[in-house]
Image (cartoon, rainbow, N blue to C red):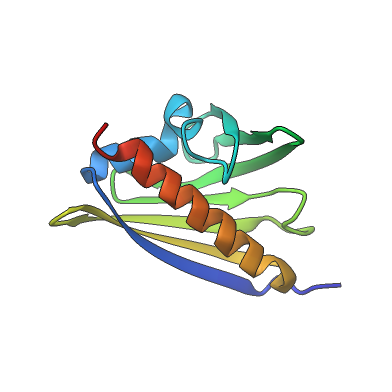
Length: 141
């Protein structure tokens, strides 16, 4: 049985102001545009501390449901939520999204804690792919 001590931290400069980046993490139609490494996503959001969300990553041969609860909302600077999926073990993970103004738009710092040690790298790869999609969704058309 794997331990849930894994953590990953990713940083990315995004081509949009902090308010727009924060909205991309909190509005269902914006989440659906990028929050799946491949394919598409479906999203439902009850945006308030204690509120829940549901994101289903959908590909040609998979549907993976992710759920969580919002723990902290400090728009447009900070968002903290639990993260539960079939791959995150018996306890919820914890994701912190920090949004900082940057000369090129926004510097985003994502920290995913409390992951089973054996899924940290797969989650790093998944979040990296999704942040790339987020940058594309925010960038110039």
